[in-house]
Image (cartoon, rainbow, N blue to C red; front, side, top):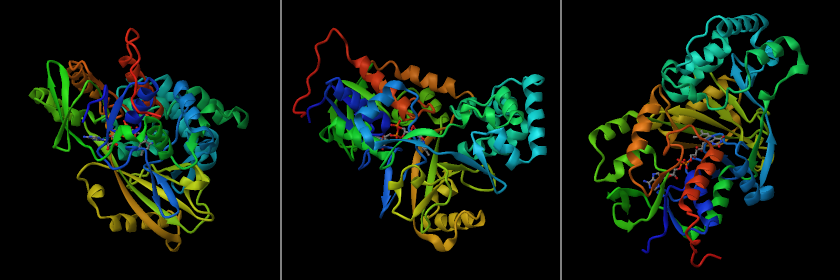
Length: 454
Ligand SMILES: Cc1cc2nc3c(=O)[nH]c(=O)nc-3n(C[C@H](O)[C@H](O)[C@H](O)COP(=O)(O)OP(=O)(O)OC[C@H]3O[C@@H](n4cnc5c(N)ncnc54)[C@H](O)[C@@H]3O)c2cc1C
């Protein structure tokens, strides 16, 4: 096979975005994907007339250029949604992000007063060092709120005690609610509801995977090689010289954008990196998610985009109802619930057989009175590996060490959630893809022409 100017590894959002921008910049490329479909961890699966995403996805309009490019690419297919989310706490539904007004009704006045005093105390008098996620949220919200809503949830999601997690695991979720807005809202009444209750986002009519399908079409399907796992990256003189596909074919490369999980990239290098790098690669970990989708003979279960479950006795963190994002996700008069169970490689939930997972989930949702067993029409289990990079305290140092080592390969560009080991989202990955391609375009060079593309 003749090699392209650019080789991209992985057809998840990051690799597809890189391909999309490369195509725009008229840079010839080939994109290699191990699976038989594109989309990585942002796909939409179908089961009969039902559809659901590989996790409760939404597109955030936080990167202006990414939003503009996506709107241009998808037009009317991209909907603007305004749907709330809630936390289920002791059988009550509480707004998420937290709102003192709603907490008054559902958390109890005495608990709320305790929460406000706890919050004021920790913010005004007890300025603990915000080293971990736990200390950051206790300082920000007070112990009562942190214990009730955030710490159990976080431990289930990441599989690590919150005292050992970086504050960065909260992403942008906990922005917006500070001591001032909390107290003003709690005691100021409905006039002062603040912007952190925002449930607005973009979502494609046919599910998040439609973004990936549009990217793949814009890349040109002929540029994407599916079922092509990169099994080795050969290097010489500080350059990646060749890649090996499916332990068989070898292809020379010029520039290369990798979205492989950082530790997988390191392990696939040939000659192998020094032992201390391989040891460092072992120290970074990823979290998986098992999805249990239940297809229901009910029109609607809740009006929410997502429900969050901080209760430590339940294995799942979040349940979403796809139809509340787009009515195309379920047939008329029917709905579905998708349950997210975070787990590690080799753990009980990851290796459990599908029928046990489904049976247990139906029991749990029936006990919570979310569903009636008799309304379950069908079900499906989906396993998502490498769902989250686990941002343990001190992870930055290990990641910096690995990325510094990899920066010696002058034609290697690393992007992606697991590639950069960062808690990033689709808009961030689009930006990363765009910037990686911009680095390849050198203004002094004449534009590269793509052969045989419409
Ligand atoms: C539960 C959940 C909810 C989420 N919600 C949101 C949300 O609401 N909004 C949002 O913006 N983002 C959300 N995300 C994040 C988003 O899905 C991920 O960030 C995104 O999929 C990461 O994209 P990526 O391209 O970096 O990696 P991936 O999606 O993991 O893609 C990597 C690709 O590389 C391929 N690959 C791996 N190894 C090889 C190999 N050796 N050779 C060739 N190919 C290989 C994989 O098969 C995969 O297709 C969510 C993620 C999860 C798990």
